[in-house]
Image (cartoon, rainbow over all chains, first blue to last red; front, side):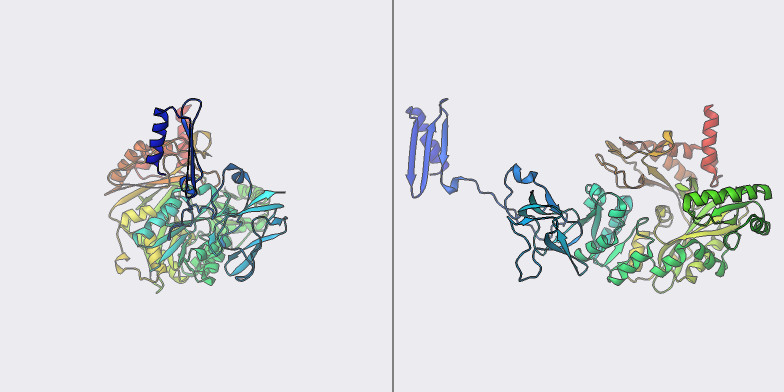
Length: 160
Length: 453
């Protein structure tokens, strides 16, 4: 059902004082109920009617200082209030000790202050970065193999 | 020519270097501290990397982070500006070993001429006059009296570990010398942890005159005339002009030759400045060398029509100094006034804060080198200079008139600045007649106090 058709249905309902309308076809279900003030409420369960959250691709040549959006769509407020482990240096971020090795941490990994969470390579030296706090990793905020600047958030962490 | 340059500095000079790079078609990478995130130099650069929190030792002086940024940004060269790491031989060496061109002299030159006593020694060897002084520190009153006799009164007692104008006191005879010697040693011990003092001839009513030097990789050295920087407050320059009202063509030729000779003797490369003290009788004495581009470089640029920062980059990229740069004669007159975010009413206390309104001056012969913009917040971590106002004219009177107009026109609201002081200086009769020495501002403030009471 598209918007034109839904509007037509709502119109019909109003004209005919109908309070509820339900329609189902090929996996798409729509229920329209006129609320107590007479205004229609539309409930839809078709995926095509739920706005999708697009992840903005990073255009080539964007300045390093530009805000890089997190690889996963940022959910609402609660995540943003969690502290982050920020980069203490300038260099290249690596999630694993070696290209074919598993990453140091993943979402859900429990860490303590001494846990190595990643490597930042600077001037050919691989620096192991420690969590410096205890908690659970909730988000990976840096991209493997990409440069990071001082202060760049690397991981979102839920403190213990 | 370089493809990409990292600017290891901030504020107006970072903007200045970025502009020269843009003129040359070179891409720019800015580094910045967290409070400088919204700074104009960051916005003007093609790319920017944060290198630390506010305090300089954790950001603009962090060699490892700057070099990392240079590698991550894949730059060919680094321009260090002035201050910060510009005169760090160690930083120049690190750049060299990482195959990044340091836009400035070699680490050896920085060491040889950056050390005050080594520089004096080099000057002496090159036959450049230095202020007569004791050969090294004087340990006892007797030694002091003997040295003073040789030098001739008046003398200046200076702390070996001093600098920036600190730890100096004059003596006009044996009595004041002995008193001063003991007091100076005590002060030096307290202030610098080293009580040693030496003696130097006290040059009365001197002008501080410096010569701009350029040297290329082939060993060619030229001078681009002098700048008069006598108007200083506590040994900090406030106003500079070129040419100097004190110097005639003969003295310019003599001093220029001396400056070039000394630079040649140390195989100097890139831009540098030789500082001299000149007395009222045309006697000049070498003081020290600055192995970097200077704050007041614009007055030389405006007088000779040369982009000094561009020349620095070209020299570092291996280009020759054009032969036209030799034996240039000043055709115009330029004055620069440093605008500081300081309150003249409370002994020039720095006033960081937010600039609510900024209207820069304009019109013919006016140049403003500044990183200010309306809404900009001046961070408290760095020096208080927020801009340089340069006025150029066909002669000194025209330059002064334009400077007066421009200072009157400039609006900076939200912070206190030294503009009112500049307005009074350009209206001062002694200044307008070109009659001033390094004591000008002292006397200027005294005059004000007298007229107020």
